Amino acid sequence: MTLTLKKLSISTALIAMTLSASAVHAADFEDYARIINVAPQVEQINIPRQECQTVYENVQQPQERSNAGGIIGGIAGGLLGSQVGNGNGRIAAAAAGAITGAIVGDRVDNNSNPQPDYTTRPVRQCRNVDNWQTRTNGYAVTYEYNGRTYTSIMPYDPGSRLRLRVSITPLP
Image (cartoon, rainbow, N blue to C red; front, side):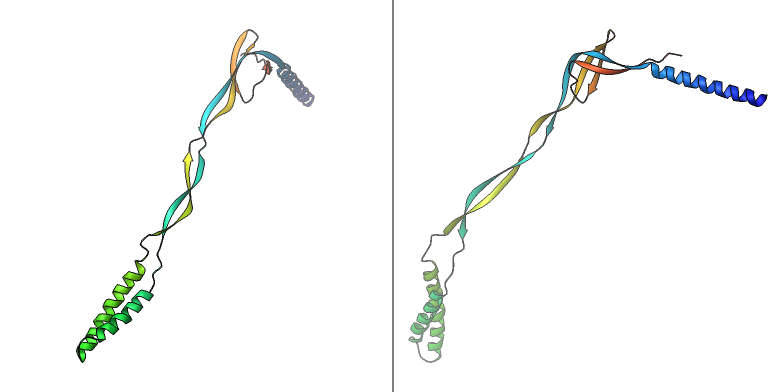
């Protein structure tokens, strides 16, 4: 008989728990609240962007040097120098004339165009520029329910009314 009594008390306890659990669920319901105010919550963020432009700059071209003036001047100087003096003095004069003629001939040939040659080339110049943007990151929603006013931050604008889940729990 004690086994039957134990089964009966376990069954009674299970039924009591089931009834109490359904009583908790019965106290949860959905209702609607009236929206009083919706204020967007905004923030300023900087997303820098790059601005580029192409400018043209003048660049001096390196002058091409010619060896023709130095060679011709060296030959002419050597010939003129060999006409001066006798014996070993003639060889020294020819060498000195060749060196002097090469220097003078090179300067005359390569300095005949004193204007430097310029060309233009494109150069891309870039810089970062601040780009401030306003971003909405939520809404402060003020609503009225059952004579009381509440405010919540929501990710969207709920419109003119707000669906609520109401839960009633007895105090101990």
